[in-house]
Amino acid sequence: MSPELDAIDLRILRELQKNADLTMHELAQNIGLSHTPCWRRYNRLKQLGVILKKVVVVDAEKIGKGLNALCTVVLEHHDEKSLVAFEKAARDCPQIMECYAMAGARDYLLRIAVASVAEYEQFMKQTLLHLPGINAVDTNFALKTVKLSVELPI
Amino acid sequence: MGVVMLMSRAADVSLDTTDWKILRAIQEHPSLAIVGIAEKVGLSEAPCWRRLKRMESDGVLRRQLFVLNQNAVGLNINVFAHVRLRQHDELTLESLERAARDQCEIIECFSMTGGSDYLLRVVVGSVEDYERFLKKVLLHLPGVAAVNSSIALKTVKMTMNLPI
Image 1: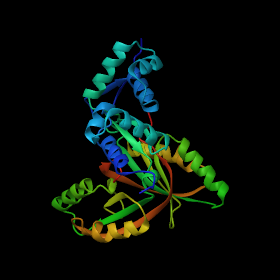
Image 2: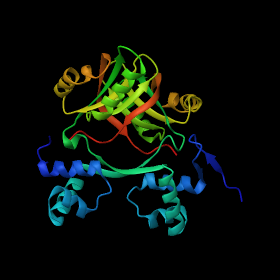
Image 3: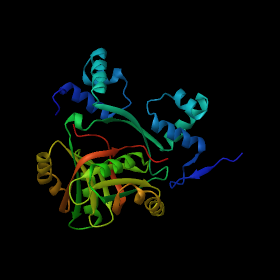
Image 4: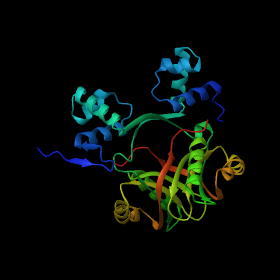
């Protein structure tokens, strides 16, 4: 664990991960702190960038983006400029939900949210294959999302 | 007046253009109060609130979540584990999926087409921690025959904002 977090910080983070709707009062109560020190710790964790943000989860299935394509990408060149250009394009592309630079034979792993296989085919042809420096894409589809969480094991 | 009604795959939910605007606004500005969202989409507060409530009860809007910085809590390593199962009967699949849901280090799990049955994202503090997790946990999950692990060097992007 990072040195600047103590046991109480971790308990606060766990509570927040479990329930993002808690009021500061409830949070303090669950941790066993009074309101002000709890609030101070919460603010410190935000300032340190430990708590990044609160997000609202939209149901992918319900809005017709329930199909996940997991694809690995190999670039043509591996100089810094190519990597930076590809990563910037990946960040800017709204269909790409996750992108990791990987060790091993494939350069990047992407998760792409689409409505259907047909939509993915369009996306691949019109967007993905045009991202800077792409040499090859290998796609597999998720048959089912068993788990998709942001809750970290702390 | 032409109102575009887009039916999503879940046939019971229909969203009009204003709903989509609300969803976009709320994804982009998750901490905004209802007044703020209403303003962004050009509604007054009450009808905006009603739409939000409707989308909540339809299950379109699910809960709010805090996103923490993985590195700041010492979880520096993302491993993608491609899992193959020994057998593919329903019982084995269900036990594996339940185990994956219960295991807090596994934060994503997809059942896959292609060469491996499941793809997992495992979050750990170090490569040593992963080695331990692999040996002590992953290889013992129900039905697991083989695990092929690739380590991420860097998270380029991780978002919950859907492309809408």
